[in-house]
Image 1 (cartoon, one colour):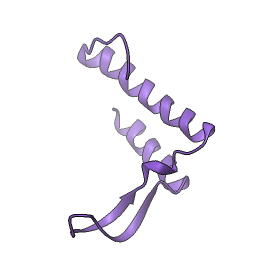
Image 2: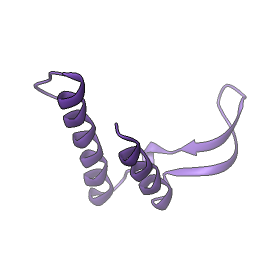
Image 3: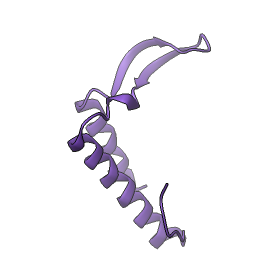
Length: 73
């Protein structure tokens, strides 16, 4: 994933409230400075944007790293 695509994905997640920053306690009892709530990908528009990031990442990996695939599960 290119640096620009990564930055765009992070901006998208922050704007959608999927990625939040603060102080969070994990199930393991550790403190984390961020929380990524994948359950917030809960409507068609957000899922469509997420799918676009997956597609761009896979196509880039195919072209730049020779990754071959015929399906995504």
